[in-house]
Image 1 (cartoon, rainbow, N blue to C red):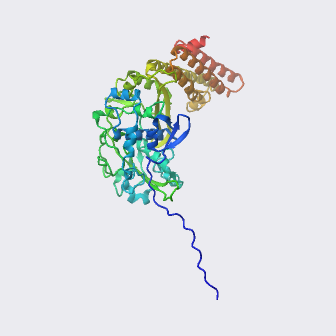
Image 2: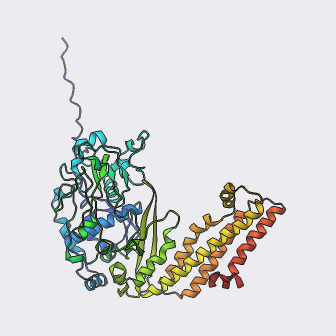
Image 3: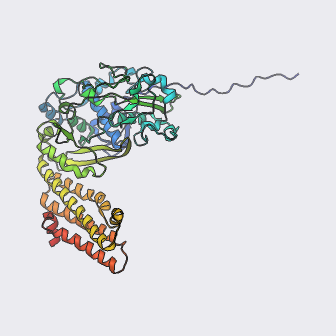
Length: 534
């Protein structure tokens, strides 16, 4: 009789659990050390080592601004902000440490900073949980660069892509959604919470250019972007939808926007109702997010006097000054003069405070720069981020204002001359055109498409040399010469498309003559005329 032997038990896999994830202790912030090393640190490590870190280095400008906004909100919530412009200046010039911010953050209750807490998930709305299985989408919907328009009407294929996101990426993408989320309709049902859950409002930074003053270290950046709280009230920090001093909006009807309770509230506002689902993970495995749900968020009534400290305000329209906004046709470097004008003329807010700073002239270059960021969208569909970094030194404010204005005027004039040269070539090459064909035909000879991206480098070189103390007139002359030479090359390349016959040669000659005449014209900037005479 054969004995029956029980099979050996199989080795059991380690138990999987719903993870917790705390950005205070988990690496989530990409940074660059002063030695140039790329690191990823937790929020606490960023604050504790801010004096030794050169800059944040997020994959997209939107994530970078979202992370800075969050760190500023933490600073305000901890009470580590100046009470007056004089105190702000003293904190910046004496490099006031951020130790109190790190101490405050480390002492916060752990369950209030858990990204996946079942009732109070950080930065999210747990009230979305009952409809998560029905309306949730793939994590691509969380990322502004991949999201489409939140509510595709075809087959939702890209929103259902199963590849999960690491928790750190999901956290930063959520911060970007809160500040830059686009308007439109969400892919979510309003049957449970109300129909207004599906109507997405534009994020508070979506329609304007956000300007961050970047210092030589992360600590300098945070100190310069903090400001005296209006009325001295720091406001409450928004940890999740179901906690906080301020009751959240409902979604049955559209309520009026609420006033912020202070800067901590402003910089941490929840511009979206978001809920993230983690992948159950074994001990030691990375925490991932595999599905998300996105709906409408908080509505704020922004006060220009207290909530737009960094905005570059233009002329009054209907009694209000509209902030500088991103343009799909004009790169931000072409608006640098607006930044320097604000830094030269504003008496209050960020630019008025910066003008009174006393930075030591140690020969190491500009002490700070303006980092301008905006998002360009086609209605509800994001197109691209636009950004620019412009050096600034308070002692060189007037010179930078002049250099940026004159440099921009020169570039604009050269671009118009390229357009006129293209017209001259078109008139010869197409003697009997159809009106509907004119734009496409002229585009063959119009070199502005190549000129504008290339013009950024000499323009920024002009600004950097000015900020280092260079004399503006000779720097402008050098910039004008480089822009003209560049434009001539681009025009020549465009005209190479002309046939090698009599009409083609005549079109080329007319276009080149037109460009040369424009460079020497009495209406041309003096720097271009001087270069034309040499």
